Image (tube, rainbow, N blue to C red; front, side, top):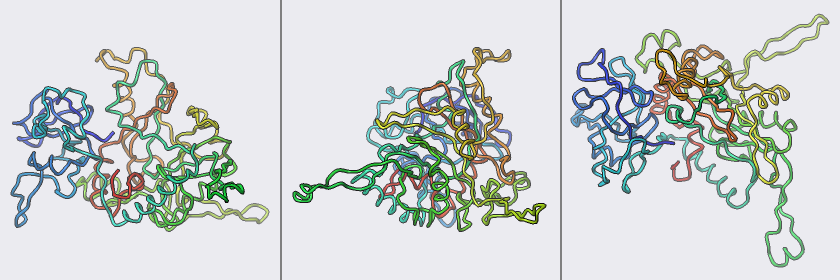
Length: 468
């Protein structure tokens, strides 16, 4: 859910390097705020990273930067064209999101007494406040145009009616109340790539037309039969030509891999990381110098490329056997695929969710990787500790997740990991939440500001008009 939250400012504390700023906590995120304007327990609106504030909202609250002769004369700090909320460092301290007092909504004419802690904010009294931030780039027209063509075809005749999209994974910190003592959870590493899905479901084969259909110019009866179909996060691909990357050949290899391996009704959801067939990185790169963090550059180098042990060109090793025969082994592929979810859908469209153990069993059977598992177990019946007996099940989960969500990526320590996903296994439907680390969010914000196109996940969500 891409929205602002009415909440309180907690744990207000001194900023170690700035006299006019203080640090505070919203949910589990640290924000920097003005010392003279904010106090402990103040009610306001918290805007998470990846939101775009509306032009009207920014103008009414004096948030826009206005420059004259290179000097900011307005006191605002937001780029008028982007107006996006980013994770940044202010005087060396994390600021993960934006907190504004509740009066920032007064201009809408809303009854301020009607706003309560826990309310979500996107539009107030007919005034748009915020939406998901999606940078516009030169590839957008191509991506949206292709999506538009697919959307028109889909509206006319569904290629695979039971080929369901993966549900969005929400941010963990806003759903801690969903966890209960005794819940079985599994924490997996979140990989920064592009989503894919493949299924063996009833697919459109053509139209059956009788003599009477021809005579009366009727469409006839649609014919569906079992077949393998693949797609991106939101679109069904009937061709692997064109698309956001210019060619989806790197996707085709995984479509071909699953063909003949999936049982009837199975859908597999996966992440593809590394590089495309022409050697382009699947996810945009970033200059680490823009973080202005010498220790980060020292550890990860001057550029972040989310390679996950892959190479722009495949790297091979030739093995010579005792009989003189040789074998070529791939040391570094161009891309890798990791499965994170599988379902079984019957002919009536009813979906059965595979447990993580069932998914791993099927992955082993098919010879495919499963997303790396960090921890699996039960939430204690009494999650509190001696130091703090009031800890809730959700807070216990957050502490457990934060043991694994930061640091170098084990698959490729040349770059940081994105974060973690925690899944509640004992739920009838897929229930999972993500938690990204701060350094990754800073990098992601820089990439979105400098890349000439959004990443595939975001381009996939755009319609012909550029709305999500």
